[in-house]
Length: 71
Image (cartoon, rainbow, N blue to C red; front, side, top):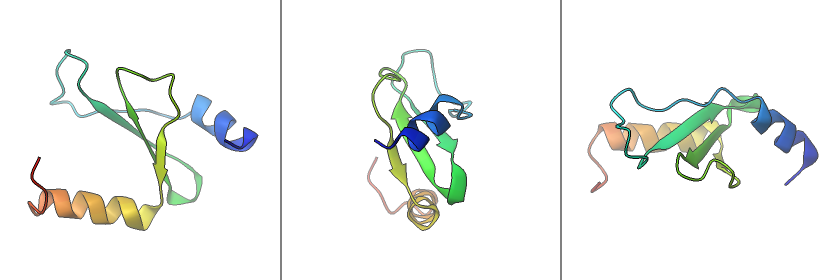
């Protein structure tokens, strides 16, 4: 992972759904430069997050809202 990305992730504003419980089975997301979105597991915040572009994030959230996925 590039040093610039590591620094950006250290100061990222991570958030999770207000519907998330305290059981730790949650994902957190953080906006990054260039519209990218970082995604991580709340149980493993020390692991490198998954980073997607703005169009990928939009497609995912739109699909989730439309019921395209079997969660």
